Image 1: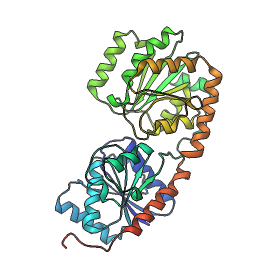
Image 2 (image 1 turned 90 degrees about the horizontal axis):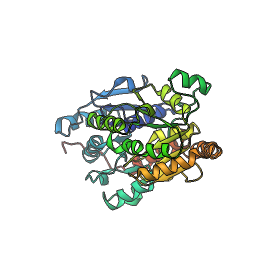
Image 3 (image 1 turned 45 degrees about the vertical axis):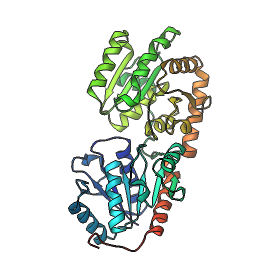
Image 4 (image 1 turned 30 degrees about the horizontal axis):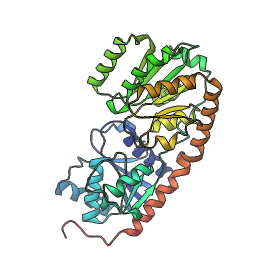
Length: 366
């Protein structure tokens, strides 16, 4: 098939990385892929064998006509959209050019364009319910495709943990908790900070690694001020804008992954942690209740409850054998459910379904 992927993000995040990775995997499976992106999207993020075209994605007649003509000239079989502006732009192409359109839900918002799509891909049951009840997408148009990551991307040769600790200047002999993601309020990093004194009071000596890419300057300042006020500066390490490989190596230094998000769909970082045999303590939001099996691969706690988070971490750190067992179970769960090789076929099937639903072509000029 010839597929137009449309992504409206301008910086690296879960949704943009998902769109790029799908494009790469589709190309590897023999499809022809064109990526429509905004001019400021980091070109280095796009694989060299993926053709990228710039667009403002502004929903005006001229730009819709330009991309509609491109779809017609290049005989695009299906469009796949990611993020709000891309979804709205794709809906216009679907309405005026009748190009089959598939959209992936990355965030739960009330928006009018959702019922226009031929197929809507959801990462979890929560998204499926929201799309039905709030955005009025017909159940027959919804498909569950679990979040996934390319297992080849994270299968780096293992190095001795001691050498990794030395490389990142992390101490040996202390439990290391790691949180990976943007430094923004919805990631709940403040809850980890608030939980830390309770963990220390229970007799543990943890070090917390915050690893991220971009952030909210005010939130970062508030985090650092609270860390200083609680006297925790020697218990926090910050790693910013590290490479993909170093992110995996940092995870391999840790004993426990903590995902304190207040709002999520399907955070890839949790899957990366599971793939590295790390047990995960996560909040009950988005797909995390599907990722994490309490008592088997980690634990689930309420959103914005540092006391619950602290109690969970204390319990797990107090049982090293359980940590090892949970990490192994999480790795097996990842292999069973969340690999690219196990989920790309579902996306291809969604494209075929969308194509079958398409009606005869009609141009914007009528």
